[in-house]
Image (cartoon, rainbow, N blue to C red; front, side, top):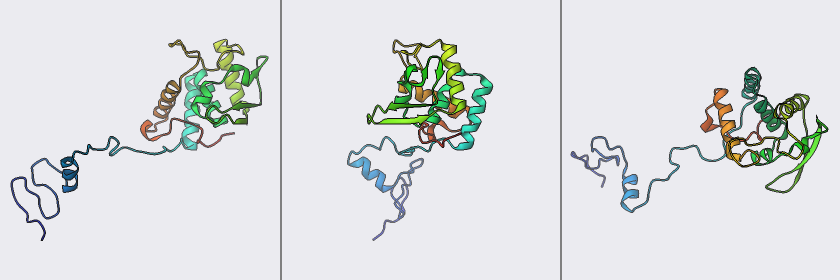
Length: 190
């Protein structure tokens, strides 16, 4: 009934091959025989990725302060406070968060995907970081809060934002492949 162990590349009773260097099973051979390609995501992490943990967020915030990266401090603080998607964050005009050179404590922004208004508060730390960024970049109310310098686009793309968040993950010692590129699911800090 069962297969007999054989020599010279034949199948064994457990369904594995005896060909040197070939570690495939009969099921994998059958997949190839009927012309089905191997899934593109075989062996990869699929589905939603976990957000940054609280200790990683604090470690990253401290590293950004030590590095004195004003833009990244403002971007990071807003991402944590707002809990919005990256597409909403990069499309944020200066006029939505600052009036007369002062960053507001509360504001409402419409989400791009759902068009639902979202009201949120900005912590004192975030207001300070955003004020410092607006002053350093010499931004006006009609400009985007995070303009794109190398490209003709007036603001960051979500792809640029994703690369920045992956850089933050690497900076904090987290594997960028297993961490979400959005901070909207991260724990809220005060």
